[in-house]
Amino acid sequence: AQTVTQSQPEMSVQEAETVTLSCTYDTSESDYYLFWYKQPPSRQMILVIRQEAYKQQNATENRFSVNFQKAAKSFSLKISDSQLGDAAMYFCAYRRDDKIIFGKGTRLHILP
Amino acid sequence: EAQVTQNPRYLITVTGKKLTVTCSQNMNHEYMSWYRQDPGLGLRQIYYSMNVEVTDKGDVPEGYKVSRKEKRNFPLILESPSPNQTSLYFCASSDIGGLRDHEQFFGPGTRLTVL
Image 1 (spheres, each protein chain N blue to C red):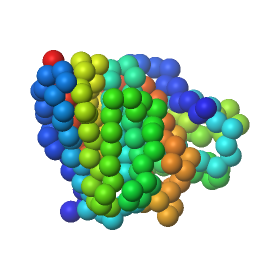
Image 2 (image 1 turned 60 degrees about the vertical axis):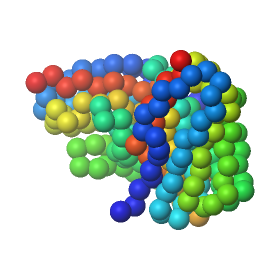
Image 3 (image 1 turned 180 degrees about the horizontal axis):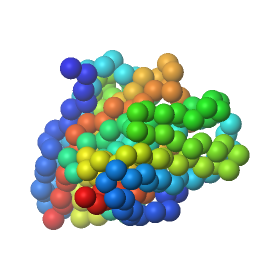
Image 4 (image 1 turned 180 degrees about the vertical axis):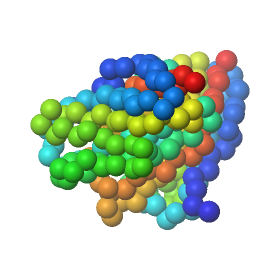
């Protein structure tokens, strides 16, 4: 069965600094999608970035980028120039067809 | 505006009193899903639906029912709620044609408390 592991329940970063959130997953499939979602205090789930497993190039969205290591089954999220608005819970998610699995989340604190 | 709506947003009820949480999407998505979010456990899938009249169990289906009579609606039914179903519930929808590359759109969440 597929699993998604986020080993850091909480992290803190100074404003304007860079932080990396880790995510590892387990699957026997070769074709799938990975996502990072942000959940601010409003509780709304917001897609941050997605990665197709068949693409070797790491996805980027402005200050957000991923380090996708398919062989290692690792999918970390890097946030550059951290801002106060980045403070949230971040969830890593795996999707293959109708199966969607979320990690337990990492709460990110931004220190002014 | 493309969106997923859920009602109610907050609900406090008592053990055993049947309740329904509604979910509706206006994006003509085939795939819809229900999740519960609990501290330290992330989001866990309860049920999902690939299309009208097609529903399947997720990881934590016990104590819940769903129906998909119309494409846009996917209500979550708790026939006899218990305190362990106190949680934050999310409905989500997505396309299915490019199923593997389409993001899910989430509703705003429903905070349920069962006393």
